[in-house]
Image (cartoon, rainbow, N blue to C red; front, side, top):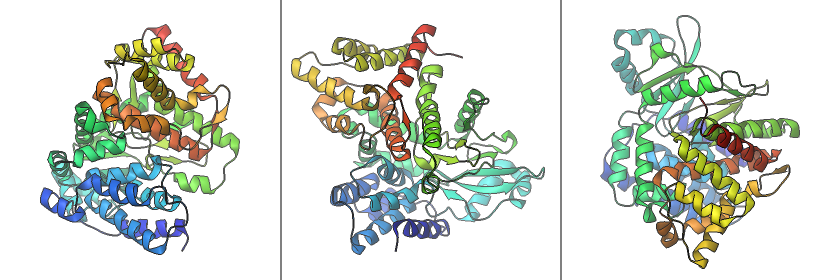
Length: 451
């Protein structure tokens, strides 16, 4: 059976299954045998990494079972599988294809629970929403699931409902020895074992994602910022049908990333969309001091009119003007290959850069790896594996501990590596360094972020 056909069948199977979130820490540990994210790291990352193409039937079956198990657990386990599936180019393509199912599919919360959540949020008004709600979800993610619905006005909407008990399950996992650390290490190799702040940041962000009132505010903010954009579309929020466990937005479908690539779009279209995504994920940092920290391909869809829809604003981080200026200075220092300026920028960011010759050399290699696509002048594609050299250095726990990077940069690293992986698959060609340098220069001219 072809890899894409197997992934499609697995996705349909998962979406057609109902299973409540496992809340008990002991039961979650029993189901994995070693803790949530650790399962994905050890089974996928350890046994299959570097094995190459052409996996045997037994391996494919094992990965399919793993995907099902990670999807059942939701939370850290499912997120770890999502990230490994699109950010790690050393995994065999068959493995990445099956893990990509987790971007939009897992067993759904039982519909009785969905109905109970809606009634708790809206009281008697819930009958109006339930009357036009499709029972089977169109996608199921690690924190919630999305059902298509039609409001009495005739407006088609997407109703995102939080999995009951998911916040409790996440807290349990972060309390369990090793689970939170393993997840943080998926985001950034060696992170949690060397920088406590990274683990705290991962916990904060994941628990924030459980509050859809926060996500609603963030989505409305991005909607205002991109209201006039020619390429990026942000679904409008329906405020009358939102609550802490429910987020309702306009129904704005499109083609999946894999479906878009399978249609073999022209190079011009690839370039246009690549620049638009690069600008959306990184340009907003310099212009507005915030960024959408979750660039996995399940969070956007491609429209026939050449535009791309961006979903899921649960993972958004905000930086003050001084931090944006320091980061802009770091970008220019790395592009100019001036180590003294790199160290100055890192100090301004709250880190402790090394002063010895060996440490400085390691720091230079790490930063040039982190910003790799920006270093070559002129228009060019992003190479698969961009940033891998930096990720290897991040595994040096002693170096990372001495560097003392603030935990708030965890998702900025994850964003960068994830975006490189997406742009590499897209095959977009642009002068990435010139684009980011332009945004950095504009930020310095303004003295910080814009309105």
